[in-house]
Image 1 (cartoon, rainbow, N blue to C red):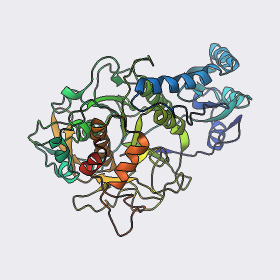
Image 2: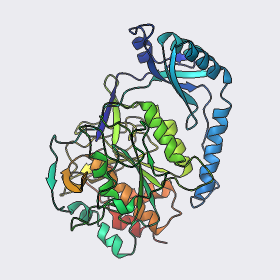
Image 3: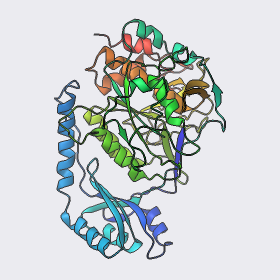
Image 4: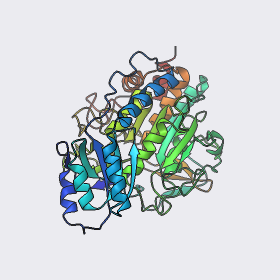
Length: 456
């Protein structure tokens, strides 16, 4: 599980700097280039945008959502772009990137320019474009192995689902992480391929790799739990028949990534080939990472909430790891603690919730958190170079839910996100004396019961 630490998040009224950014700018030299996120005062209201469009009409849903988002972005006053370009020609703006997944821009400029942007009537807030530390493993040296003990796959009864004829075929899963080693024997055949299946915001690789400095291997391990085969002699993936596409947050060194990179990734996943007329976006996306605030409790950072709402409206299911900050309550991380996501905690072979697994209530809305728990202690999966290793963390729990959703969609491709969420919860095995609760949510994932509940 990766953790993103930022100093503050206190959005101010329209046309103003966030408090944390205002304080930071006061300490910067006048010629320092500072990265910020500019949100315009007008944002797209997607509520009910696709209410009458069946989930099976994927292309129609996507087109409708993207059209609405781009319509708002195109109405963005040209004045702000003209101002930024003028300041760029004067050397006071280093770069800028406009977005349509939310109505705004990422800008790298001097403190003076940023303050002028914040004063504009058409600007809502200007906040930090914060740096994202690389993910970390639950131990400094994950246990390497030549073959896997697939207790986790057996625990959620995935093999029994395969016996019924559902292995995730026809479903595409997305993975946002450190990348994926596409040459691994358990992952190579399930990569969708083409020029619309891999995104590197740093432009370092045009083909899937797993590279993020000391964090290298995190994404490959996650991918194996979702779609891995049985090349080791034992099955490691929940939905071996599904295909995967991926994007990585960090660069090769693992020391460079900003929240603007994540916005770019989220936007790419909505339209990988840049043509909303095609159906090439994933059904469900695994996010084994998160961020929390150091100086604001409970932790809730809405930086990506608009992006995730756009995903949902388009029919993309966002699954996040809950975080590794248990056993304290109110320890869930964003974006997993958004009400729009499915948050997953970690359980052990005895169905007890792992001590490190983050607890609820939900930091953003006081809801039940996590939604469910899944195996996340000493889980064996793929490692770069063709090997395998055991790792613990809620990072390992979330992919079990993503794989199970792929199995459910294989059984009934017309399921809505609301139906999937409901079925995952009511079919989970209760953990503890009270159900649901703020430790295990609605219980431990049961893939067989979940799929049986949706077979037409």
